[in-house]
Image (cartoon, rainbow, N blue to C red):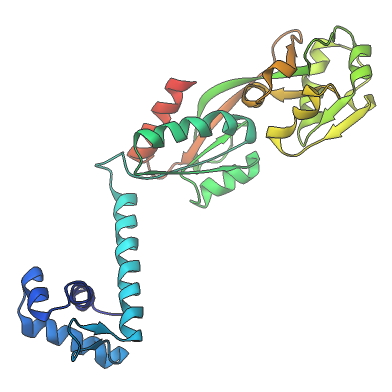
Length: 288
């Protein structure tokens, strides 16, 4: 491993192009600077052309300077990650299911606009991937639609989200035959969600699997596109419906008693959330 002090002397020399100025900036002797460069050259070969004015780097010298800059960036990034004193810089990482993610990601970007030195890293994933990502420390926080039963995790209720029956705007859906006429727009959780919700609105119905299927999409932001075009109906969590860009093309049909799911915030139990994560949570809770 290369001595950090030697690297600092070399990087400063490459910047100021003078042994004397390098020694003055670092508060060491010129002989010490020369010794540091000599140690590096013994390991890496010639780094500078001393006969040139200003000093010129060899190809090996340019490669070493690039390495020094990478080290500086890595040290800066590490300091940001470990720092608890400043919540306005560093990374906020969150992994969540699609619907709640559509609701929260724009809010996180608003927070980043207030504090541009923050980095927002968000990923959409189903519950099982959310739990694994947090357990493996790939993300500091996760959101799940089911409360996990794992002692390695802390789980607390974050918010609630109802399921909604969504039909094309201006469409009546007061009886099961209306849904049969429309047809179902399915998605990865569509059958399960529709079964849960429609059993309340239409007790004793023949079952969602007996409805004509008019389409399928695994992209949550696109599931309502065919609905807005009059091609069918679907059942989605509220936040996914709220994020859809063509609200005038759809409408929500009341489906009897509301079916409301809890959204759970999880993180590793062994250590508390970072100050940045806690700030982000307070910001999000205020926006819900």
